[in-house]
Image 1: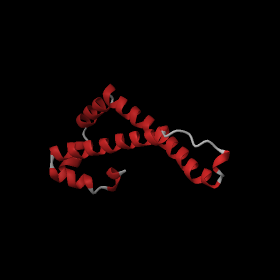
Image 2: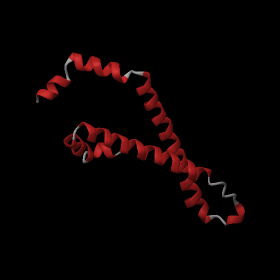
Image 3: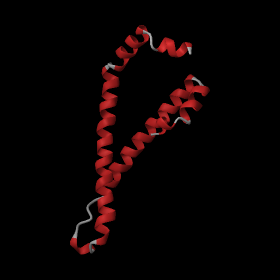
Image 4: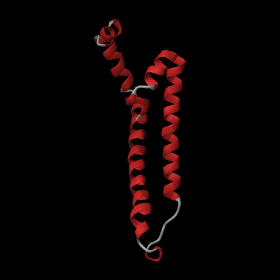
Length: 109
């Protein structure tokens, strides 16, 4: 209860606003946003290629290169490393915080 009241004070809000608006944090958010859009586009492309075009005879379309598969793997690896880094950072703070965060469904996404 005391932590919740302390977190809503003006001092903490001002400090968090200052930290969140730092260029490094903003660049991380923008990079994650761009990679998320790329991830969705690659997923759509691959779903179309492997699901819809599978019903078309192979001589009627070009399968393309494995560039999309490689890009999908790279973006997935990036997000996996980000999650591992997030959880390891929380583990260095406290194991109790780590386990509470680990089982929180909003952090899995």
